[in-house]
Each structure stands twice: as structure tokens, then as C-alpha cells.
Image 1 (tube, one colour):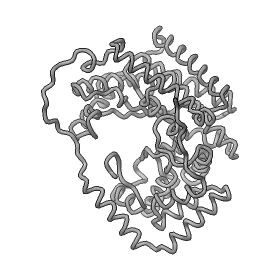
Image 2 (cartoon, helix red, strand yellow):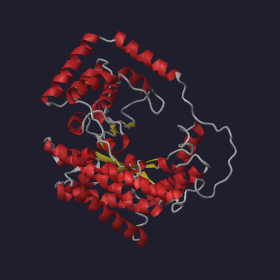
Image 3 (cartoon, one colour):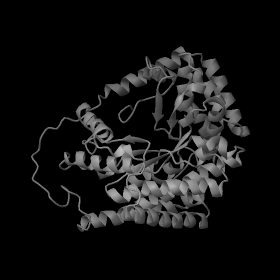
Length: 425
């Protein structure tokens, strides 16, 4: 509880988190998925208490539950009701929070699970297609919601391949939106994306080498056209970053931005034979994967059958075999190994007292709130879910009276059920 992120159980926690931060002057990104609607509503409620109109709020919720079934595992409900909640969020944001990015369609976790670069592009864009189809089916006009769609990619070690991957994804998404969905607004065809350097490439052995890995990956992301960037810390393989390692990660970005000159050009490597060849090759192979998904009944069907998960597992296994056979060199792990002295490294350790304090805080909120109002709000949420209405509006009313994230999720569990993952052999 609170050891890999901030523990947010009710509006009271969100009020503490953003105390003194003017929400009309910042943009906030939340890596939250199955409970994204609840966190978004809490954020809006905090803004309301600050006197900030929701129409000026800027930020992003990840809200990409399909990749949770594929790669990450933080799902609650089955795919169909989860898609319904996501399209409810699209509609809610269009009306109430028009500057908000209601989804960050994520390839990052797909790559962290062991996919190839081609699979990362293909499965991410296939998920994007599924979201757009669901939104149109729910009655939304493509040019009303598509300009606010955003993406989130990984940046791995193969420098030129990663640059080409981003270029291919951008080209493919523009074609998908224009030709498949008939988008007219150029903003609907843009692939706006955030990049994070690859946590899975960082090593506990000789962790100082991770500074070089992160710098190479960050540079590839910039040359590939990323709009925003997260650089991992050198101690990622050991723990959450210390203040020192987090600062080195930040300085890596700043050196690229202010000293390297690469940000002075839109597409610095355009025309390079290697980059253009790789871009075309990744695009071709990614289209093949998208066709394979559609031939097998679409993303939802492939998830339910475990087909996409198996493709990623096979790729991860092949990569590990290559490492074990030294066909893929990992510096400091399977080659250029040194006898490392056991030394006390400074790593971040979270005090277990955090958990006790959070439990007490939740108990206090439940004791001090108006429980009649909470019960009424939760009942209205259940009725909306059963009727097929937009659930984000009653969620917003529930968080305002301090219903907890768990209570709201339990109401939706009762209506939608829980997803059980298929065993893949």
C-alpha cells in the first residue's frame, strides 16, 4: 500500500496529494486503468474545491484496460464492460473535461512483458482500433473524441529500430484514422505519444551502466518524435529511485534537450537508408499482425483466447534463449562480467508505517462522512450500471461524498463480475 505509487482510497487522499498545487496551472498524468474513471472524478472534485472549472483541466489517464489483459494484469471487470466504461469516459470528458486526454493507449507494458518492436506497434494500434470502434458504436463522432487520444510507448536498446518503430506507428495511425474511420480533422490523425525508457533492459549487475542505456533510449525516443519523455533511474532494477538517481535521469533529458541540438529538427534522420528501410519493414510486419488479429475475430476475441498473450510469451522466451546462448549480449550480465564487491548501495526503502497510517485514514474518512449520502450515491451508481447508462456521472457524485475507491469498484463488480484470466499453454 503506497509502496509503488500513491495510495488513493478516497477524495480525502486526493485533497492531500494536490494541496497547494493549482490544478488550473498544471497538467497531471495518472497511470491508472481499471479504476481510471474513479481517479478522474476525484481529480475533478479536488479542482472544484479549488474553484477551478473542469473545462480548463489538462492531463491524462492511462485508462487502457485492453493492454492489462494482454500484458500487465491490473484489470477487474471482463473486457466488454471495461470497454463500456472507457467509452463512458470518452463521452464524459468530451462534455466536462474537453482538454483532458481520456486514454493513453499503451505499448509500454506490452514491450515490458517481452514483445518485439513490431508486436508493440501492432498490438497497441490494434487496441486503439478497438477503442475507436467501441466509441463510434456508442454514438460518438470520431472527430469529437479522436483528437484527444494519446499513446504511450517503450524505448528499448536497438537505437535505429526504435526510431523507426515510432515513425512507422505514426504513419500507420494516420492511415487507420483517415481511411478506416473516415476522420476529417487532421488532429484526429495525429499519433501523439509519450515514451518511457525500457525498465526491462536495466540490470542489477553494474547498475551504473544503466545511465548509458537510458541515455541511448531517450535519444532514440527524441529522434523518433516523442512529445514527452520519462527517463528511468539507474537503480530501477533494485528499487524505486533515490533522489540522486532520479536527478541523473532528469539531467539526461535536459542534456538531450538543451545541449545535443537534436530537438532543433522535426525528423532528423529522415532520408537515412537504414531508418527508412526499418520504418517500412516494421510497418509491413505490423500490418500483417493487425490482419492476423482481425482474421482471428478481433482484439477482444484474441485476448479471450490468449492468442496475443501467447505471441508475447513466445517472443520473450526466444529473447531469453538468445541471452542464455550469448547470441544477445547484455553487458555486465552474460558478457563483460566483473567480480562485484557486495556493497551497501543507497536504495529507497518505504516505511511499513505508510500502510498503518493509510488504514487509519480510511477508517477516519468512513467514520466522519455522511454515510446515508454514500449509500444513496452507490445505489444510484448500481442502477446506472444495470441500466447501461453512463456510469462516470454517478461515480462523480459518489466520490464527492467520500465513497471509497473500493466501495465504488465493489458496486461495479456486483453488476459486471470479475475477469478470470485464461490459462495459456
